[in-house]
Length: 234
Image (cartoon, rainbow, N blue to C red):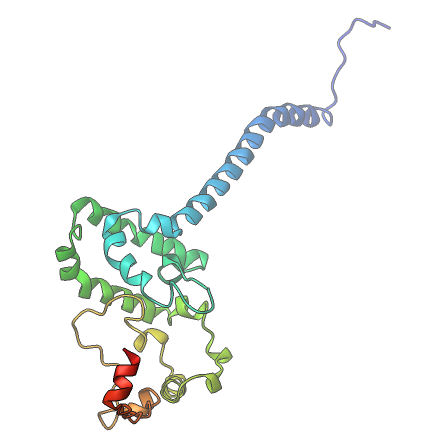
């Protein structure tokens, strides 16, 4: 028997040999793709978190000098419960797909930042009505989802609400109204346009419904003093 003759590889062993070669060839690209994918996911999430912070929102003076100052005087900024809603809580959806759509739409805001469309208080006030209506339409379309992320109508304690609030909330729930239809201007100043909200039928709301009347206190007459008592006190 000639031991120096080449060993013939059977047909069944040839595919295994080829797979081992391809496996060694593909291992490095697959591992590299996995690592790059993980880095992309982490970077993407961190970027989304950063762009949703209050610090990012007021990094341009258009927001810091206008809407942010109004927000600082609202109950969403400081309240008795100590729960603060930042800009993104109201203006950026939490759900992934709506959030991505909103982020893409925000690229238009970057363009207007470059163009200086609202870079002065005068320009901002001129655009206030348009900006407000755009946001109202967005919230109307998604059933005020940003409000409902914190405020659940099914958890209302109507007994702790005022008479007028109870009536308005019950009527709104029965009519299928959404939060923004009545709660415009709770954070930012309302533009000088007709709102069509809080209309009483018949017109006019009694003062006692808005707040409990404060009873008038009778003035206590000052005690009269004699000249002798006045000299004694001097």
